[in-house]
Length: 246
Image (cartoon, rainbow, N blue to C red):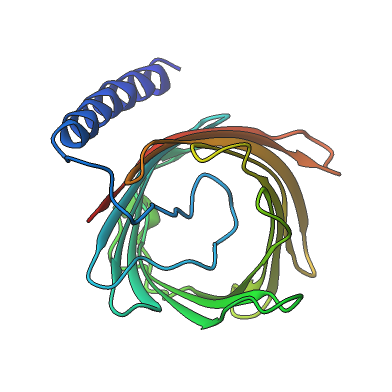
């Protein structure tokens, strides 16, 4: 128990320093930019937007659950106006496992933009490297996942996002459905359902979250959720900060 408390305390101290760094960065960023940041956190769905050409974006957060404290880091870079590459690094403690989880390289490619009722569609592919991990997570495997992200802008204030994909060598069907609401230019809220379905197990979850734009290039977020249709309820929470270097 003391190890978990210490881990959480150290993580929170590091995270406070991280937030202070970004606040100082934004103080000297000058006037607001035309570009506005678009993130793939704190929800579980991937969005259809990619990072602008030759721009770099960092998304950083902490996830908490029972016996779990994990730091989530995603680095994103725009290769073209419709293509980005991402590096995902998660590290922390999950039950009896601790350390750096396998590094993941990801590609995101826009396919089509929304046209009337036809949604915007983006492809997302992830490849994890089991060798690039701490001892507890080390393996010789190369897990991958494939996904299509869809989005319909229902109105100026409501968007409907949904993902369909596969993982675990096509054994899993990964689904999500996200309804977002933008009350103004700075705030956004969402409610989301996401699940992983396989022959052996069916996981269903729901979460809600809030995002706030401190600056067009700087966003903070917080979200929480739980499992549904399960014998034992599992709760989780996350909060984070993201910045687009323009």
